[in-house]
Amino acid sequence: MAKYNDAKCRICRREGAKLFLKGDRCFTDKCAQDRRPYAPGQHGRARKKLSEYALMLREKQKVRRMYGVLEKQFRGYFYSSDMAKGVTGENLLKTLERRLDNVVYRMGFANSRAQARQLVRHGIFTLNGHKVDIPSLQVKVGDVIVVNEKNRKIPVIADAQGAIARRGCPVWLEVDGAAFKGIVKALPQRDDIQTPINESFIVELYSK
Image 1 (cartoon, rainbow, N blue to C red):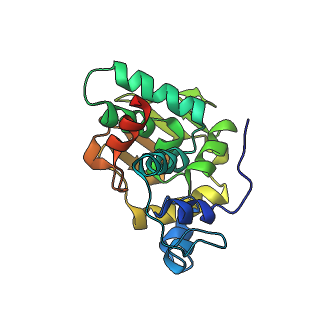
Image 2 (image 1 turned 90 degrees about the horizontal axis):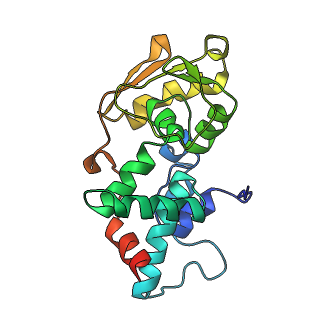
């Protein structure tokens, strides 16, 4: 599988928005996007007027990189969202939010989506009492996610729980930190996604 090995802060600077790829560091004054709010590279400071196509492409890349999804999988999410009832763009974002690795991150069991993906792959969590290791699994209302008892002393999980107070937990999730348990109370709604995203640009891009 393809893997990005360069500095993650360069991605945020390239997209011109905080994607929270470095976890709690993004909330400190060390955040590269706050310190250098321009694109990386020799010509990063140059003012360039983006074309209509470039604006749509950048929006798609921003969302794809934020959730850590490769192009082929992201395109598959779009087509399934397009065939489902409702608004295509909102369906796409809701599908990405329902990924297990994203839910683990939102619940505060990991500092970033990349870290959540790694923890899920290592079988750290159970879903409704069954061990799971598929980060892309779609959660449903009523699903219960629990950290295995033998893994509850992992330092990264303790650090992440300390950081959840700074970024907050979505209203569609319920977390019991003492029991290392989270419950999916409802399906995510568009208003629950605070990161500025113009999903209509993504729909227009794939509709060309």
